Every structure is written in structure tokens, then in C-alpha cells.
Image (cartoon, each protein chain N blue to C red):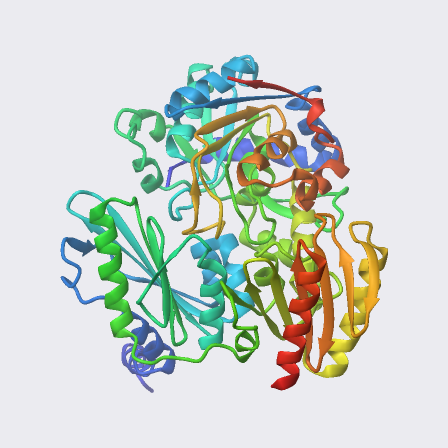
Length: 312
Length: 301
């Protein structure tokens, strides 16, 4: 577990978070606009040097200083729970983001989910970047938020730090998922939610036993809609997607077929990045419910033509 | 009055002999004996995940296991002197059908068959097999020779420790055997949809079913609780595809119906007893013949 934040800092953060919650939809709108200027921008860099390629991809969007101002607090959401090969974000990708944020003057980096030391140790850069890793703080404190525009998810227990940090960076891996067929930025948001909220994703807000009787077909639709709904709370200011080694079957935990596009994707919009990333699993984004529902909520592009893309 | 310390001891004794404890102990007994896998040693104690705790272990991957019927899972990591790792996972399922089902859905088409368990296959960096009510997955950190020999030794050791075998579900045996490639077994939508071959609206809930992959077509058998249920769901399915824009050219052909999907594949479907039968092929004639064949085979049973 990462170093805990100190009590004074945490109380201060809770006050900020509480104000956001009281503001409700207004706060959500502010979050939505903060990281998603139209047109949607995306860059992709392929090659073996994952750490360097993250820097190139973010630089292609204008550099980390575009997203992180000196003194900002940054929340990172890494798909880090350990699974088999290609089932979690490569730690070099996450470390590059951390390094760039600190160099841009970030005051504090917060992990929005619990990242174990074992995860970081899987990087060849672990020893050299131990000081930066030690600066990442974590709290499992959750805050209940209402999601007025949610279609099936009307409230969620979500990381308090996600609500209070100045800059939110999502760092998922692309992989197969047995329910949604695909997991990337949108799905990774579940990592910031409490276990009980995630359970509701499968059965809806009020379906309870009825949800169980309805069978999994309706549950997959509810899952996709819930994911689209929870992303209304806050969209990332920056997405850095790991498409270096990805699990193409038996996701999300594996083991399964591993593909190696060796690509890193950076984007200003979570839906744009997910739409682009589907190609690595041979999927058509138009057939993915989670993308469709996110588009219907209006926080992402409806076609690839709306995305300004740089392939380096 | 019984002193609290004595109560704790008494309770511990009761729990130690409880069926739950015995079931967990049996799961642990399936692990290779210490030193059995040369060059590899266990990193830490085995972890057992019971019921909903599976979400803590494989999170989003847990639903498929619950759909089949999950009891408990055991996970343990081994490490070589060179720092390579092997993760062994043993899943105890509700019955042998569940274990076969989860194996059949996860085994993949690019695998090499191996004589481990009742059926097993090997991939570049992992081996999976089923035996009795157990589904076993062994995965390594890479596909070097060191890891591959460790994988195989681990899988064979667990196979030897599982004493009883089980039967494949009956519905799988109803798939026409000629030229059958892979056969998969499902108990819900996640299992069926994981094959990405059939939009399932109107077909659920099923009791279970089988998917047979052949060179030029796929046949899906869906079993219902009664013939009336099967008939009703077939009517629902027909009504759905007549109105869904992704399907076109619906036609009745005697006891069957044919429709083309958005990928220009022909879907031929019919009903016999408890079953709905769907055959899918890029050629309508093949879909029709294979559907007829499956229907007559089921009638023969």
C-alpha cells in the first residue's frame, strides 16, 4: 500500500470534496469541461521504449504542463490489481506519468485505488524511481455522490480523492472483458468506486433479486450503462492508455492470448481514447454498448472524424 | 460458566472439523508437495477465496465463474531461483459440468492438446485443464524453457492429486460429431456471448447449451426447462429478428426458419423438444443442412 495521507491534509481534502458534492451537477459540469476541449485530441506512439513513449505521446498533446500546473494535486487511476500477463497497466507507463507530473510541478500525487509495492516492483525502473513512488499517497476513503443524469446508476461511492484532486489522469490498459467485451478508460473508472457500488453495476440500482432473475443479458446492458453513468461524475483531464501488451481473450484476468501492439495512447478525452483503442482487439467501437451509452451522455465524440489524431 | 478462553478452544475445535474446513483442506491437498516441482518454490501460503470473495481475486472475471456455479478457488505463486514466476489457480466448481464449461469457454482455439486432466491444453505461457469438478489454470511470467517445464510439472502434479473424474454435460454429446472442432458448454449469457457468434435477445433464460465449431459452420444448442418454454422462446426470437434492422430476409423453411445477419451469415434455426437449434454459416445451404442434422440427432435421442 502507498503511504497514507496525513490527517490534516485529508480533512482539508474532504472539505473541498464536500463542497463539490453539495454543488452537485454544477461541480460535475466543471469537471466535464476541464479536460475535454473540443476537438478531441489523441496521440499514439509505438515502440519498445514504453516509458519514453508515454512522454512522447503526452508531449504531442502539448506536454504535461498543459494539464498539470505547479502546485496541483494529481489523482492517478491505474489498472494495477495484479493478474496475469497483460492484465494490468505496465508499471513503466504509470511511472512515466508520475515522473512527468512531478516535473511539471505537481505538489502531490494521489493513487485513486490501492497500488501495491509488488506492482511497482515489476518495473525495471523500480529502484531508480523509488523516491517518486514513495511520494504517491493513498486513502481508501469513499464519498457518496449523486448522479442526477445517470440512467441506471443514480449514486455511487467513489474515491474522495478523485473528487478533490486538481487533475485526474486515467491510466488503463486495453484488454478483453467477458461482459463489456472491452475495457479501457471508461471501465477503469470502476477502480475508483467502492465494492458495493461495483456490485450495483451488475444488477442496477433497484433491481435486487429481480436483476438476478432477469439473467445476464440485461445485466451486461446495465453494466455498460452504469459505467457510462459513473463517468458523468468526472472525466479524466488526461488519459494515458497502455496498449503495449494486451490480453485479447479471457479478460479481464487471464491467462489468455497476448497481443503486443507496443503502443501508448494519450488523449484529452476518455471516449475518444476508447474508440481509437478498440482496433487493437479487432473490435468495432460502434458495437460496444459502453461507448454508445457514453456518447449518448454527450461527453465524447460520436465519430472518429471528430478526433484530432497524431500517430508518431 | 465456561471460561471464554475455553470457549474459544472448543469453538476452534468445532470449526477445525467443520465441513467447510475439510473442503478447504481438500483444496489445499491438491497442491504439489513442497519440492515436487524441481527448481521452483512456493512464495507464500496458498490463498483461498470462498463465494463472493472471488471478486477480490479476479474482480471483473468473477461473473463468468458465478454463472457456471462457483464454490471456492485457491491461488498460489511459485518462484524460480532466476526470479521467474508461476501462478497456480485451482477452481472448485459446483459440479463437473461447471468445470468442463468454464474450461471449454476459456481454452481458446490456438491451443495444443495435452494429456493432463480429463482434457487440457497448452499455450505459450499457460496450461489449463479440467478434471472432476475442478478447473485448473497454471500461468507463468514468460514462455522460456524454464517456465514451460515448470508449468507442465505443476499441472501434472495437480492432475495426479485430483482423484475423481466427472461427466461432460449431456447437451455437449448432442452436437453432431462429424468434423466437430471445438465444443463449448454454457449456462448463461456470459458463456454464450463470450464466443461472439450470436445475439441472444429473445433466447434467454436457458438452462444450458452447447456450441459446436465446425470447418464451415457453427451449431448452437439451447436447452430449456420444457418443450413449451423452448417453443415460446423460439417465437420470441423470431419476432425479435423480424423487427431488428441488423437481420434481413426472414423466411420460414418447413420446420425451420432462415435469416441473414449484418455480417451476411445465414442463421438457420428450429426447435425440437427441449431444444432450440441454431446453425450459422456464410452459406445458407450449409446452415440449413447442419441445422436439420442437429434436429434429427436430438429427435433420435
